[in-house]
Image (cartoon, rainbow, N blue to C red; front, top):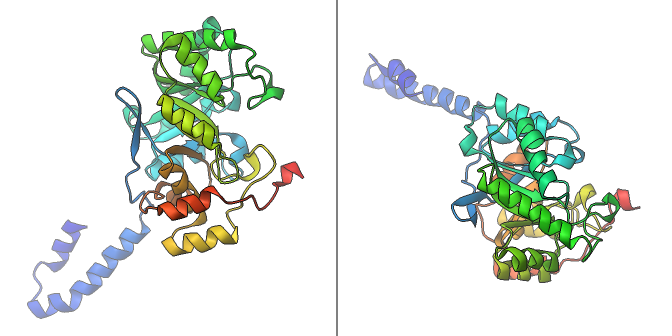
Length: 330
């Protein structure tokens, strides 16, 4: 715009310049407003492993969360507006979609943080074969930034975690496999998902290291503060799936984004209720995974870091009771 403005102003008298300049500036302003929305605030990082920094909000690619766009379209939009953390999984069946979006994007691979998950405690050999022969080729990358064991259980009917102390041997063998992938440079950081504190402790006791991340269900109607305290003491970063509740939440209750209590508090900060809930999570040290096809919502998610909730308001949100049962549980 600068060169156009100089060309416009060249050769004008002082009086003509004063009369015409506001019109030119108005055209510049209109052009700027027409540009695609981008994140106005840099998303902070959290160091999850030595030298590995993870952006504190991710775009999830579970198909059930994306009702009006494809996974490819959702990832495209996230990258275009400034998002840099993508979350996928073998069980989602979306790794190839993410790979297609990455290939079509102008964003450099090293600027994108990719999280994916292997199904569960499938064993050392199986996990290495899966990542080398399926995961990486589908994503079209040489490495992933974070690899998680999706669940401590093998049977889907036990999701997210109903197997307890069973399968300990299989979990530890699988962990050994992902440490081997890390040694090969195919994975930068390794972690778990849906693990109880006791199951995380299994890894620490056996391997003398803690998982970098434990991704669990976490939203206003479902947050295990005992687990959060344990993960903090172990040096494990908590990450949230179903971070805004809604239909993907498990357990039968949620707090809608239309809740009057949330609307009143969000209004005091000049933020949306989604931004309020996401900020509650990040100020509690939890990294949310969110998903939306709506551009305004996605931009709002990325801008959920430009305000700070008071400790009083954090405690108020900690204590909110669920206001409805999602339709899938009725």
